[in-house]
Image 1: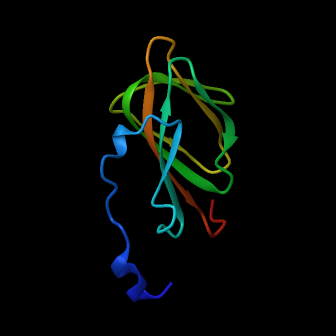
Image 2: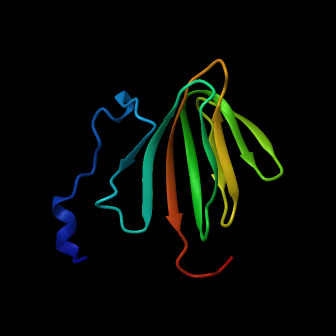
Image 3: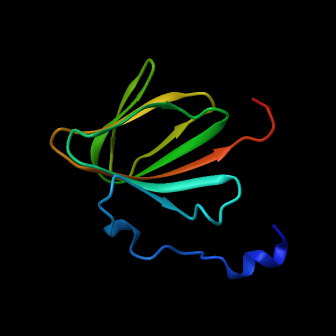
Amino acid sequence: MKKKDFKNKKWIKKNALKCKEKHTELFSKYAINTKTGIVYLKKDEEVKMHSTENGEEILIILSGKGSAFTEDRKIIIEKGDIVYFGPYTNHSIKADKESELCYVYVYSEIKKKNF
């Protein structure tokens, strides 16, 4: 992508938090090495176990409560928390039985194997 191509890109997503769909991608047409999105889980709903592969993922919890699972850990998460998953980490997310859960994820693939 040429430098001048960045001039006309969208830099803001208005009203993103009003979304009630399970998964909404953000800036997927514009970001080069980063995937972002908003995930909205109903009470007791989950995102099944998946891997970060050769990338890193950060979750920013916007509202609600739930749990983040790795193969050997369970972490309680709630509004205001930020969660990091390193390369090749299998993980899943589940909303609490009493609460919906909404979070933004930021995933970036690592191009060089320096880990």
